[in-house]
Image (tube, rainbow, N blue to C red):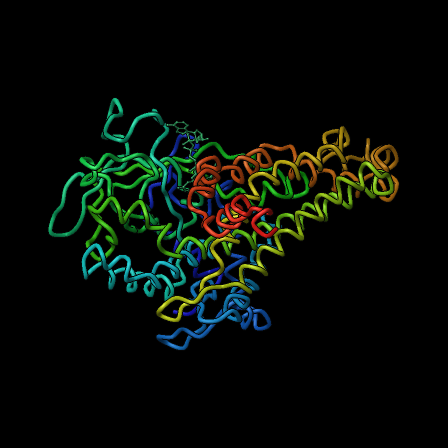
Length: 487
Ligand SMILES: Cc1cc2nc3c(=O)[nH]c(=O)nc-3n(C[C@H](O)[C@H](O)[C@H](O)COP(=O)(O)OP(=O)(O)OC[C@H]3O[C@@H](n4cnc5c(N)ncnc54)[C@H](O)[C@@H]3O)c2cc1C
C-alpha cells in the first residue's frame, strides 16, 4: 500500500483498541466529539501525501514495490537524502506550527534508524536482526502511525524497579509461550496512543539491577488494538471550543495516556531485544536510531520557534511594542532561537557520518546539543510572548461575543489596537493566549521540558560521554610548557 490518504488513515482507527477517556471506553476515536478533532488533523497530514504537487516532496519510491511511501521511512544514504527528508518533516511540522509533537514521522524515522542498525539487535541473537528489518518494512509499506513508551510509572524514583513496594507495577516479562512473550504492568506515558496504529515499547531508563534483568530487559512493538492492552487518557484540554476561541487546542490536542498491559502476548516476530540488559540500556547510545528522531524533532522545533516568532511579531505590532527597544530585544531572542535551530539542522546534515553499511546519520554531537537546547529555550520563548502580550492576552471576549448584536460594535471599537480593529485583534490574541497561557500551552511547556528524556541526566551524560581528550591534552600541553625552556 502506498502512503496513506485521510480516509485510509481514519479507517485504520476503527478497530478494537481499548481507549479510556473521561470515564468511558471510546468506541470510535475518529467520531468522538473531542478526541476525533485531532484524528482529523492527523488525517489532513496524511492527505497531503496524496496532493499531486506535494507528493514528490513527501514521499519516495518504496524499495520493495516502487509505490510512493512516506519519506519519514527513508534510510538516508547521502546528505541529500537527509535534506530531502528534513524538507518532508518541515512540511508536516509547519502544518501545525510545530504544535503536534508526535506527528507519525517522528517514530517512523527512529524505526528506519533502528532497522539500519539491525546488526546491533543481532547481538541479542541472530533472529533479532531480521525481525527489526521486517517490522520496519511492514510499517513502511502500510504507512503506519506509531507511538512509543519508555518510562515506568512514577512510584519511587529513588528505587530500582524490583525494589518498588509493588514490583509488578513497572512493565515486566510475566512469562513466555509458543505464541510469544507475555508482559504485564504499566508504562507511564504514550502520547498520541488513541491516534496511533502501533506502540513501540523501548527499554525503560529506570535503574535495573543485574539480577532483575530477565524481567525488565526487552524492546518490542504491538498494535494499539492488542487484547489486554489499555490506554488511560488524561483529561483533555480541548473543551470542545471553536477554532476561533482555541485555534491550537481545538486542532492539536495530541493526548497523553498511560499504557496498561494485562498479560499481553507479544508475538515473537515483534520482540526485538530480550534478556540482555546491557544491549537494552545502550540501544540509543550505541545505535544512531534515536538520532533520526532528533533530526525530526529539531525540524519540528524550528517550525515551532518560527511560529512563535510570527505570533509575537504580530502581537508586538498590534499594540505598538515592535518599535520599543526592550521589546525588540526580546523579539531578537526569538529570532536567535529560530536561527539556532536552523543552524543545528544544517550543521548536523553537513557534518553527517556514514556507517560501515553506507547509511548516513546526522551528526550526533550537534544533534545532542540541539536536543539539550530546546527544553531550556522553549519556556523562555513562551515567557517572552507573555511579556509582550501582557494583560491583553486574557482580556479577550469569546467568539460568540463577536457575533452578538448587543456588543459586536463595542468590541470592534474598544478592542481595537494600533494595527487591527477589534474583531481581528481578538482573533490574534486568542491565538497568542492558546500558545502562551492556556492549559494546552502549559502542557506544551511540560512536553518540551521532558519529552525527549530527563533533561538533567541528559546534560550530565553529555559531559560524561563527550570526547574531551583533545581539548584536555591542549590545556595540559600549555600547563607543561615552560617559557624558560626556550630561553
Ligand atoms: C507531555 C509529555 C509527553 C510525554 N510523552 C511521552 C511518550 O509518548 N512516551 C514516553 O515514553 N515518554 C513520554 N514522556 C515522558 C518523558 O520521557 C519523561 O518525562 C522523562 O523521561 C522524565 O521522566 P519523568 O517525567 O518520569 O521524570 P522523573 O524520572 O520523575 O524525573 C524528574 C526529575 O527527578 C530527577 N530524578 C529522578 N530520579 C531521581 C533519583 N533517583 N535521584 C535524584 N534525582 C532523580 C530527574 O533527574 C529529574 O530531574 C512525556 C512527558 C511529557 C511531559
